[in-house]
Image 1 (cartoon, rainbow, N blue to C red):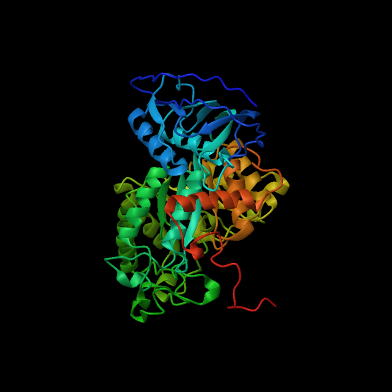
Image 2 (cartoon, rainbow, N blue to C red; image 1 turned 135 degrees about the horizontal axis):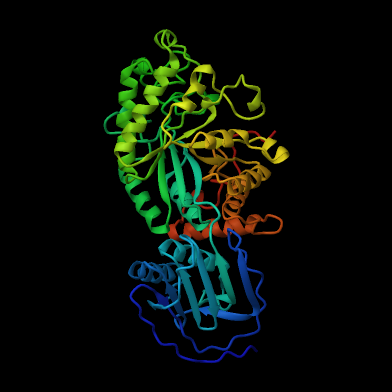
Length: 510
């Protein structure tokens, strides 16, 4: 038996700190806790595998931070939601002035938990680490309590902007998007870019969406509220240049032109892949859509405008005009609209590099003499998202495209995809070379093992850590995905797990 001294802890009240202390009288059976492995991996950690802290009605949690009243309410509500307990939450006196903006410290001992952070975001992250460490007490048919080891955590992120990029395809449900919002916050990302693939229900231009598109303003309002509570900023995306089909090129679909051929004048004739930049109506439509979507997302500080993988102009009018002039005016118009709304444009980098220049060999440079000239003229408050999915960064240690945009005065975030070594090395490069963050792309791999590994690896790298688990296991990720589902009250089989089904009769396996 492990003896635990019983004692009562008084409540401390201070004007700018929150302390929740949970006192208990308890003696527990012998325990041997596994090493805590929250995601991201904690920078400074110690724990006693043989000492137990119960999360029950007798526990006391102490939180010290600036946002005292808000933090008290948040901790109380989530303790009840996650662990079905109502701790006494009160203001504490711990010094938090040495903690970075999103950093936190946690200390547990029998009967008490102490959380110290600069602000509510740090408190959230501390609570997420504790939840990922806690386990149910294995007694009886129904969970009666949860438990933690005696531990000490101290952590802070290495990159300020830690984003995920998610495509909202027609096949993606609002429940899945909410699941992603919650998981992204749980893994301590702070931005989620959501790209509409023909699902945003515009009131001004209803033809822009599929019939029954699931990204309604009502649904977005609900998701923005969820995101605000869990601590993540939702960033909308509309492709204002290429990818105008709002559909994957291999599928042959065009969200607008398949059902509205009368709208052909808005798009380039070669497949409708580009918006037609010589038609002022195209820019006007996009200004309407950007403003409408920005408002529906709660007027966030960023808006992603895409601009990757556009084709050369095929329209007779565009071809007869200096294309760089058309493109600059088009992007500048959307940029100025966003600036007037208090937001900054984000865009992919590839069309701003001349693919004929040998210095970009092996990197993603899909521009020409015309489009690449814009790198020198576009407003410098645009955030450049340098996407790279190859091997050269980690094979050579060089990232010339990111360095180039940084040298021009842009803020730059690296955007890896599904190569785990690429995620680690590109994010490390960002940390060590004063890039401004990471925007981890998911694209169509929002399921299965690759999805789980991307989520974990990018989260750990953005906090400057190695992987949380030694040898990746699907079980940990599945547990975290399931916990986020519990917060949503999911009971639909197709919404559990990160596959809709375990098997299918729709396609042949061979």
